Picture 1 (cartoon, one colour):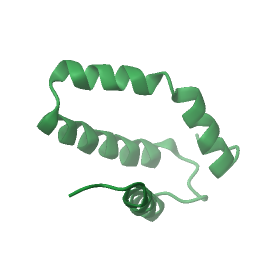
Picture 2: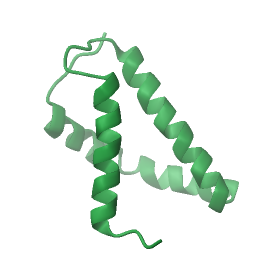
Picture 3: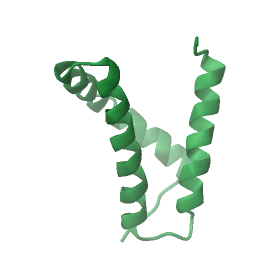
Picture 4: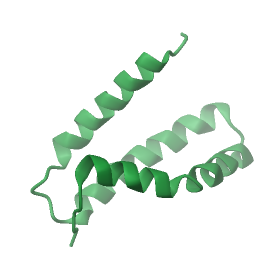
Length: 85
């Protein structure tokens, strides 16, 4: 199956729908955020292991880490300033 950019946008929206199911603006506790994001990361890493060697996964994570400031800005733009306790 060939994945198109429109498919990726749909996948991301589906994932946001799952996140929204467990987290909302009223949540001031970081534990839910950690549970949801940690679960998503675990599944992503499990999927990577199907097609990538360990070093390739580590290299991918290293590359992703260079984009953290950009990702943080996107989340701030999307959600605004939030204080989690």
